[in-house]
Length: 459
Image (cartoon, rainbow, N blue to C red; front, top):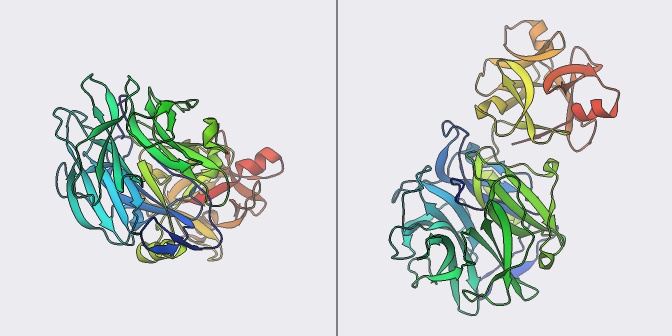
């Protein structure tokens, strides 16, 4: 959930499989091997204003680390019952090869609002979402049904739906209700109660005969394990990880290596995703992942991730397309992005408010169409241009001088060729770089200079 410091859940992972093979899901239908990733999420800006939307958002990624929001980062569907908004969406491929989406029935941050229901959608291809309904999980009063996730319990021949509710002792526990169709459920049971407040259960089933449950405990992500899926059988074992107040754990395995990733989300509005990695779930030990390697969709909160096929990935991009804008991440300060503030170009720490200050439309260069110019999304008559070597956001006055000052050539990143650097059109010995977090164009000679002048163009 994304909540006050008393709550929440989820995020992402992975690498890309190279060759699709045929797989069979339980007794379901065969389908091509998964080779990419899909993420569901909702959005919140820092001030809960522009950029906040409690509908179902979707992004895709070939590597599970850097994401392309679909539909211009707008929702694909929005709940029409209950609270008329969702939090904490979860995405799973069912045994028959189709998908189900679950989400908390809550709009905004009114944590006092209790619901015995969750939102549910079905989908065959993630391009259309059908069968929208509210699913009742329990009859308990004065409590909630937060952060639902699902898993297949082969021994029962049922799906388990995990969610957070308050028990009779007055603290949050992880509950489970079973279902075969996500239309009706059995009576709920306590799945995990260590005797203190826990929320946001994320379950990884059947790794060398062991099942792993990660959850939020006192602002930290902690794991428990069991050789069965029986309620009450899990015991805590892992070393906790956190980056500030962290919630929303999601564990996913790389599609191409023995690497596992644990993702978490800070619980503040417009939370920041952090990731850790491990080569062994059994070790319970995690190492922080460099923020250079991953980028969350702008304003994204509390995600659910599943793997998809290459065909599904291609079809989703074909239907929804990539955003018409980009964000540019600093190479040596990867928590920071290029933005304008009071019309000055600089790099600031994400989340950025207003968030559109960090969105740019990369258009053909005003002075040379083989170059690029950076047009502001929220001030579309203004472009980044250099003036006395400093970068500022100015209105295009139509002059050749302005066009030249606002045109740059994109090159391989000076510090990392897989990233990008930008050489000035009319000062060709100078590149865009940051200095004391402010953007300017300078000659580049040192290792630090090259790092200052390298950026990742993404979303």
